[in-house]
Length: 67
Image (cartoon, rainbow, N blue to C red):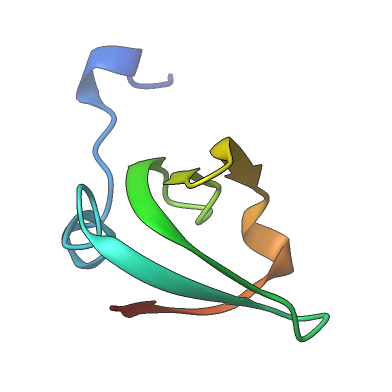
């Protein structure tokens, strides 16, 4: 028996990054900077950068830091 989608909640520790400017360091040593628009419990993240919106898959992220 699974929970309905309305019961889905993102981890509170991840939510502190929402609507904040961050630096995201990737496992391939690249970095992206921007404002977090959305993220989920797998750290799949959507950021708004100078060049537009960007999706980053959670498995590619080494860490996220507040700017």
